[in-house]
Amino acid sequence: MNTIELQQTLPEVFAGRDSIVSDIWHKQVALQRGKTYLIEAASGTGKSSLCSFIYGYRRDYQGIICFDGENIRNYSVSQWVAVRKRSISMLFQELRLFGELTAWENVQLKNTLTGYADKKQIRQWFEALGISDKWNERIDKMSFGQQQRVAFIRALCQPFDFIFLDEPISHLDDGNSRIMSEILIEETKKQGAGIVVTSIGKHLPLNYDRIISL
Image (cartoon, rainbow, N blue to C red; front, side):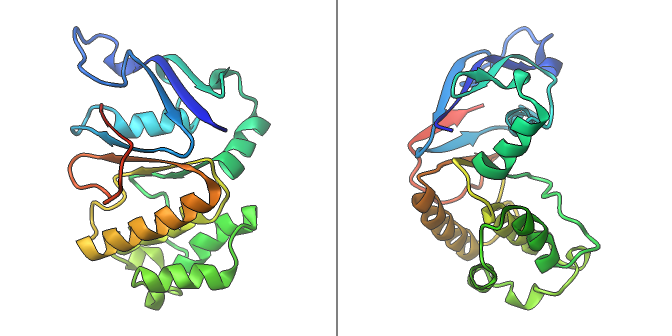
């Protein structure tokens, strides 16, 4: 996948609003593979909705979203499976981890489906992000910042053309944010992938090709 295009897209819940000032909603926007984007937004302007629309998790929007020119509303279940397994990785704001499972088990679930990363590499990511001691700890016993790092590692356990990170460092200090950026740059460079980060203030320290206001 090389291009994600939004054509006059708008969440249905915004349809009754008289005026919307946005670089995305009701505009034509193309996200290109290999580029790095920051989507800046105030709370309640639809950034998490945007991620869900692109991931096919929600369909309550007006307009058109296309992957390489094909309207995603026409995608079959098997096409969505392929996209989520090989083309788009998504780190949701709410993380969507399984609280009753350990950090490793959460990551292993994803990696078993894709077979992408070896266990040694995953351990190295845990160590770099300062959570190696949480490997066998249940997610519901961990802080939200620790959970964010686990969810980030899980998002890396697949091939992708684009990786979306919805407020990935809201609970991280500057040191861990920098390490996350370094890992992200290394992994996306290997795959020639695009990066899309959303933020309501604090954001990953990256060299963004474009900053978009939602």
